[in-house]
Image (cartoon, rainbow, N blue to C red; front, top):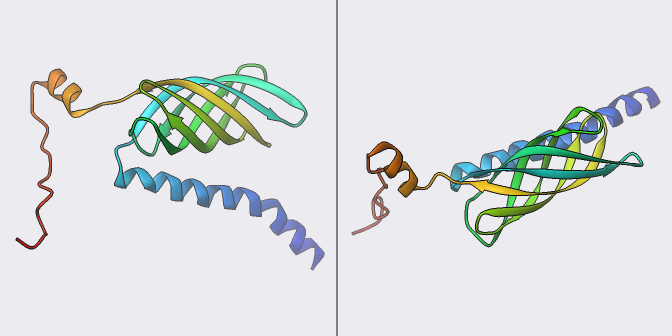
Length: 141
């Protein structure tokens, strides 16, 4: 019985984190996700590590709090760190707090710049007008 408990305890935390990541990753389906590039600092295992990374945010609404999922390359430890967290979006920047995993779990802070593809940018780049769904469809007229 104790061996089974030890076996399950090794996988409970990674499975929980994976489930949370899937739930948060599904959120962009209902919103307009945006991507960000920036710097991160992680605190864990009695060490501090800095890195550069990319984040996908659940929405592109400015001055709002959003969920994030991302990947950092940590410069000191020369390792990859997957992240899940929350951020506050400003006009063209973000600040975030996250939980990361690079063999061990740690906490981090990140900040960077946002890259957003809006309808106007799409129209300028392609010369085409984006198709915006009619919001009145499906409603009683």
